[in-house]
Length: 117
Image (cartoon, rainbow, N blue to C red; front, top):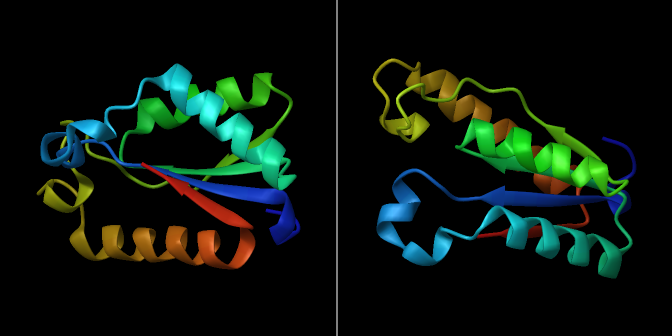
């Protein structure tokens, strides 16, 4: 990630958060519109994508890049069972906690603002 002022952190809540709050089920097209609008308003040229939904992160990255914005994400192991990473016994809980800390540190240190569902 380059200068902090150029990046918008985006955290999309999925998996267990969809069960806890139906409002988190924002359609992908709407997410892209919101991300694009926030980037334009804040003067950001890149987006750091964070989510527990790996396929969604990949699709959003492609859509964001097609708009001429940079997209980055931390490559972290996610559940293959569509479970939240912290609830999947197949994933290393300590490594998952470290991954979350890395994402939060990057969002705090390298991004101008945060957009979260």
